[in-house]
Image (cartoon, rainbow, N blue to C red; front, side, top):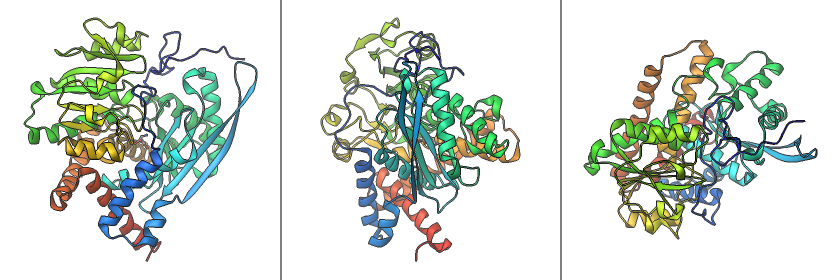
Length: 448
Ligand code: GLU
């Protein structure tokens, strides 16, 4: 029986040790302020419906695209260190596969349920279409309290999940990746388990450790993509790196990489939060040092030269760019008005509710939506898959350059469409994504 070592909310164990491979988990998971009352499914469904209506999409086709192609729910019984068997639920939802094999992460979080996974699977369909990579959309999850589990327990959950959804997976069928509370180590266990059943197949999951045919640049990719887009938008707002002040909500994998890369460019990161609290320094936080401090088990609120603030205050900090990189629904009708920035770049999936989106538009805040902004992760997942299929490796520079090319092109296409139609970037992105999926489904003969 394993000893029970509780984890802190930032992906570090309660004993201050980093996760086994040392890599941070995909997102920071329990950051105040409180989340919206509206569910992720309602949020995504709303944006889909508005875009579908603007496109004049036929009702019967919209009904196909609103629902999932296949949904699987499985039982994950695990004996934990309290000596009892705990029965968790595992889900894999394949939303739409018209454009290629299903693709999307797997999250471990107690709030995971079928509706949330449905919403996130459909977001992956639009995301892969918006950036033009040949995948459909999927998502998976297990409703386990990942932050309280030991590494042995997490390994059991990961392996059992693969055993139970095995028939859906495979390099040409459905390719999982990390998401909230899962990381390269989780993917290594999953690849190993899949390999026991099917033989060595690194292309069966992405986001793996470098030692197991993972791709250089994958861990940083989502954060790097956000900053590529910041650089793309900056001239519109007459921002240069030295004049850009950034606030980052969430210091997990996405938030920490975004903050570090922005700081390397010369931007000033004036506010950061994680599950343990929030801090500010109007002159700029030393993000690299903060990252090292957190990796060593330190709390952000105990870091030198920062002022601890209430996490609710983080949204009100005066800045140019606000990056939500925690869970969905963090910017909602009761707090959107407090934002004191000019640009929101959505690192998390579904961080802004429709009501908040309208408030931000009224305030003149430009929003780069999740389906475009955080696509860097799945773009480099695509590169990892391509490399794995050839058992070949690109260097990091090549990965980063190709990521920049793809995400900038997608941004320009979405912007052009938003400009032409007078719509938000979010609606333009959804419209573009929906059109591409409809076109693929039509030429395949799925819909007519
Ligand atoms: N979980 C990430 C996302 O939501 C990455 C998915 C992937 O790489 O397949 O985009």
